[in-house]
Image (cartoon, rainbow, N blue to C red):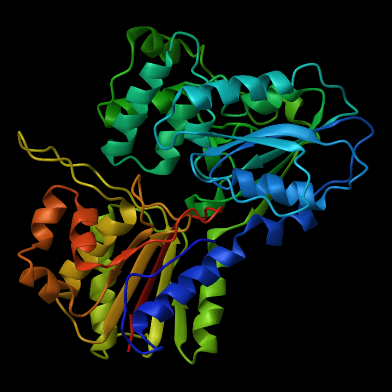
Length: 443
């Protein structure tokens, strides 16, 4: 994994270095090569076709190539995000094609990949096996609009969802019903072949029907649910699509559908496992480690304020947590993009950065508290950073440059704030994705 820290002249026990080591431990635990072997089925009588989508797609494909018997047939196609295909290990034959497309807003490359993947599973027999590799980001990467919907429509709806503050389950309920491949439709197209799905969870609760909008998992949500979400967040869709949702003609395959008989889904890496790896690394350094939850949702800035209050109480000896300690959490927070004044530039940054802004504001320069928040895929939103650091002197250093947390929150500009301070966490693509990682160090 490519990585570097912001320039630092601190001692080896620098809190930043410690927090970064915990993040790296969490990411390592979720790498596909470490987690795939135990879940691979034996080769079938017939063909094995590998398909998949997600930010970990390239690494998952390489893990399968490395572990699959050399004399057993293997072919297929997986789509990942631009720049997220890992370097190929020397001597590893390429049996699965990996292509790249846009995330979080889909593009023509993702549309072409989805069409090809759907084509690959046509005409299979009961002797064939479809191995589906799914990870976070697959919803945007595996895009095949429902009838009556164009790619431009999907792009517009996706942008509205991303800026609405809707949580991942709500967004993916809509995406499932506006697709010809999500919400179990891909698995239905594979019949009568057996489908085994290996998935890396990036969603609170590890609901496999939500991860990448569950292309191979039966869907219990309904068209009515999708309509209610669109209405709740004021998201516009073409009238023909609204009518199709209202009539139920865009309904997804449901649990109990015979086409899912014999299929299997295996979670090969989860947010909780990565938090546990970070906790073990912290304890090895003599720190107490507390995992709050791997399912924290809500507005990023508000979650930052809550955890900031918790860290302050701990630093002041008023909480059940005993310093020196780390307080760990994961999940998927959201950012509601605020309207911009005319002429005001669009803010830059994602969930992790906005969490750090809220955290820094709540801590108010509290001594003895440091934090790192970053996305485990190495990309916070659409920027080149994974997240950011917060330190006791964050506000003071920002004030010296004329920067105010409130101004940057108003325009959703975490990137501009932490970039000016040299406090971005930059890792490059990690080739996995178990969502948000947050670590607060209290000494």
